[in-house]
Image 1 (cartoon, helix red, strand yellow):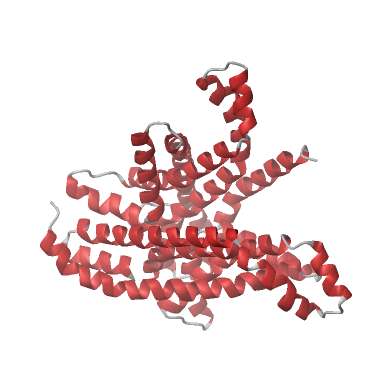
Image 2 (spheres, rainbow over the protein chains, first blue to last red):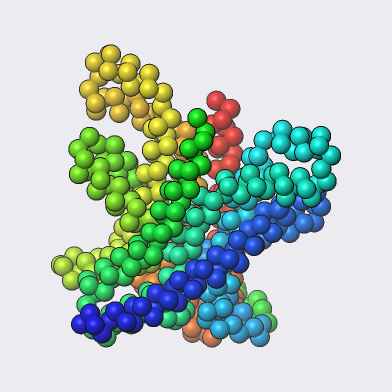
Length: 213
Length: 216
């Protein structure tokens, strides 16, 4: 039995990992865009960023995915499943990520900005050379956790019939009716995929706290 | 494109299903609160196998998708003689998943108690049970109530996943309405707006609670 089902799990795993990585890259950009947008001096930009964040944090990923896949075609926008999945996941995670960006940037001590001003740096230099390098390091563990949330979120695309790990498992289960084995293996596979991220986060957190005493 | 007559026609049915969504949220939250506390205490236990088990359980459940956990509860347990209704399976899955997050919240609260409190309890000859019940928990839970409130909102937003195991909450109702009429736009938009309005207003309430707790 295992010889038959493991290759299909492998195909599903490839889709799940692709989805996670593509969405993570786009979410990262959106998070910075919206995070900086909320700290902008221009009111319209702040408003726009806040609206994006509240809408995508306030409704759920599930609803967003179904809306993009089933409701958008009524406006003539028919997206392939993979694109709909990446779009929903990255827009959702981007909104959560923007809060990470915003909160770490405001947590960089004020003295750093003041010192940069005293050194006659331009606002651009202040952000890129002083604030951002310090904030980035602090963001890493939170972004690691966000990637795990995204990995878990990818399971929802199985409900719009994209052939990811969970979809493969449900199809297998309806043909061979062995839920115990199939769903146990499925859980373990997700856990194994998440391991590099959870270990990575722990390693980074350890490194970050090392020099603090 | 947007049909208001149709919207008004389906709105009552979706609002009716909101009752199931809300009750699933609260029952699952109660499960998460209780199991979360048990996990926290188990993790702090001196009995190594118990604390390792709790730690492993937390890590495993946190790194695997809620949807798959629901499938597991709903399709695997009946194989072993335990058939559950969609509602029970749903609140169990949602509750267990978030108990691992809440156990971190409890842990944060407990670890912020100064060591002097433990020492005082020992000096006053409190039993471990009395120490937890009368000294540690009453001080560690109130400060983390806002964080718990935020998890309640997160769980509320996760309830559409329960539609995957055929629980007829608002998302499932919207899906069924959509497949009858081939119009998904209105139904899914109503669900989205409901989530946005309810979760945003409750998050404002949590923020007010936070301010009040900080003032004390």
